[in-house]
Amino acid sequence: MVPIFTNFRPADAVVGRLNPPPSAFFPRPWSVTMMQFAQEISMQRTPLDIGQIARDHYDTVFRFCARRIGIDAASDAAQETFLTAQKVLSKFAGRSDLKTWLLGIAHNECRRLARKRRLTPEPLPLCELEGAASEENAVVDREILRAAFAKLSPEHRHVVLLREVEGLSYEEAGKILGIPEGTVKSRLHHAFLQLRKSLGDAQGDQS
Image 1 (cartoon, helix red, strand yellow):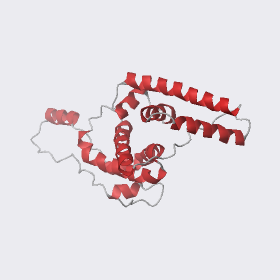
Image 2 (tube, one colour):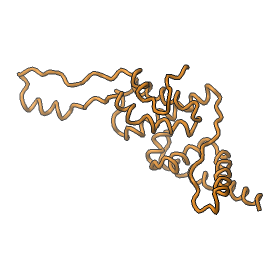
Image 3 (cartoon, one colour):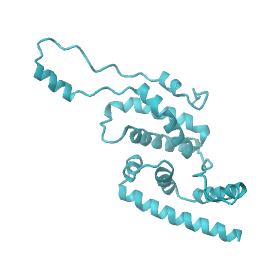
Image 4 (tube, helix red, strand yellow):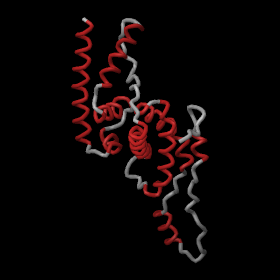
């Protein structure tokens, strides 16, 4: 696939490939009674504008994809996310937050693209560690953290990213991954145990 993006914010390029659904508001015959009209209004749902959704959420989806498959492939995954979202937009029932729904699609697109291209990207730094004695030590600490994070299984990496980097709730993480909330908590617990072990081993090697 040839990317259609030229910069970090190609939301308008994505929108150019989308076909927003027409308005659901149609003229009504004058014979409709006020009560019938009120009932129709209460049941009527304002149509979602896929173009505006892409503009509002592109950056979030791009960063989500970049953390999983690398910056080079993230634009393709983000594009496919919104194209897929357009196809299934009518099925969005509002039972979850729109961002959560989009990230669930992005998660599947990242997995698909990773398998197709056999991507093994370098994990991005999880955070800027505070309290480092110097910038040099901070860089070393971040590299140790990166190495420890890379040792986690894909299932454990996903929950750490969703909870600790993207700040989502257990419920939201579960919806994105398609697993129960309790499974998210269990995986996160085991991920932290593995991270502590890897970090402890690395510190022991440096002493």
